[in-house]
Image (cartoon, rainbow, N blue to C red):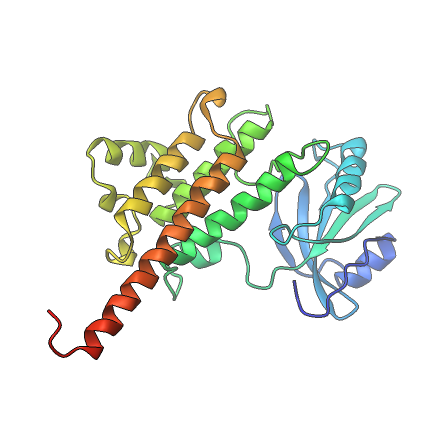
Length: 269
């Protein structure tokens, strides 16, 4: 969240939305709900998601989503600023994430390659946000928009599946479908060969810990199990990823200590 940004969580008229978005001048995204536009509220950037008339999400679902989002307070979930419910014009206004989405920083063409440590932390943070929605909210909230899913049966376990796909993208640096090959099938094939090094993003050039790599890969594969009952809960996923993050921090701390001792003792071998 930007410093000094105070979510207003208020209702906006359609005329105000037109002003906020400068007549929907800048479309920054599109999904099943509708189109998302860049805007400005009180000097702060916002994202305005307008409900399409052809959207499968009807008015009741829209109202329910607004009500639920009003109650969500989590550091890893984008803040709700307000909503528009003006006759046939309906939209939700969120805090704008200036750094873009994960795709902007992950795939080929990005100037900076995300480090292994950063990938672990991103995965852990995202998992904590979903775990809060599943286990910290009453009733539980299904995210639905983490990643496209092949069925319309949206449950907490479908969120887990979708998160697993995102986690595989995060650690491999590959898109869900690349050259006609599904990322899940590709990773499973590589696992059968017993070599995790071929799975991790080659741009890291081996700069990752093999033990945490295996743990993350196994966690991701568990998440995308074809049988929903075999998938872990998001709380389980958070625990696995937190252990990986902590192991990586411990490993780095140990490495630094060893190097400093070596430098201080010219006779060290």
